[in-house]
Image (tube, rainbow, N blue to C red):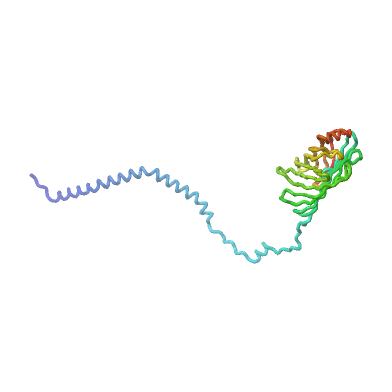
Length: 302
C-alpha cells in the first residue's frame, strides 16, 4: 500500500473546507435571488406609488414657496380705512312717515245708470304705531248707495300684522250711525293681504267684514289682482236692508298696467251677491240680489 505525502493531504483538506463554505453561500445567494425575483412586482408597485405621491406633492411644495411678507399697518392705512364720520351730513329716514292709497277709483255702465266706486286707505305714523284711515263707497245713477269712514289706531304686533281699534261712521244708507271697531290686518302666508274687522253698534248690533286680496305680478308692469270680500251680520237690521248671517259677498278680478309705481289704470270684472234676508230686502225694493259688471278705473298712491 502506497502512502501519500503530507502535501497532497493538506491540499485535499483545504479543498474540502472551501467546498463546505461555498455550498451554503451559494444556497443563501440562490435563496436571496428567488426572494428578489418574487418581491420585484411589489417593489415596483411601491416605487410607482411613491413617484405618484411625489408628483402630487410637487405643486404643494411649489406653492409653499416663501412669499413677500405683508407690510405692517400704518396710521395712514387706518385713517383711510376708517374715515371720520360727519353725523350732520348723513341723511336718516324720518321716524314719522305716511302713505295714501286709492286701491280702487272705478266706474261702470249698468241698466240703472252709470256707477262709481272708491276704496282708499291711508296711514300716518311710525313702524310700530300708526293712525289708519279707511273709506269706501258706491254711487249708482247719481245717488250715493253707501259711504263710510273708519279712523283706527294701529299697533304692530309682528313684522307682518297690526292690531287696529277705533270707530267707523256710516254716512249712508239710511241715517248716519257710528260703530266701535276692532280687528287685525296684515299679510298672511303666500302673500295674501288680509283684513278682518268686527263692529259693535247701538242696540247690540254686531257686524264683521273680512277682505282678502292677492297681487300677482305677470310682468314688471302688468299686475293681476283678485279680491274677495264678505260681510256678516249678527242680527237682522231691516231699517238698513241687512239680514242676519252672511249678508253680502263680493269677488273681483282686476288687471292693471303700472305706467309708474304710483299710477296704474286697470280693467276688471266684479260680481256681487247678497244672501238670506238681505236678498229678500233687495227683492222687496225691486233690486236683484246679484250683479256682475265690467269696470274700468285707476289705482294710485302718494
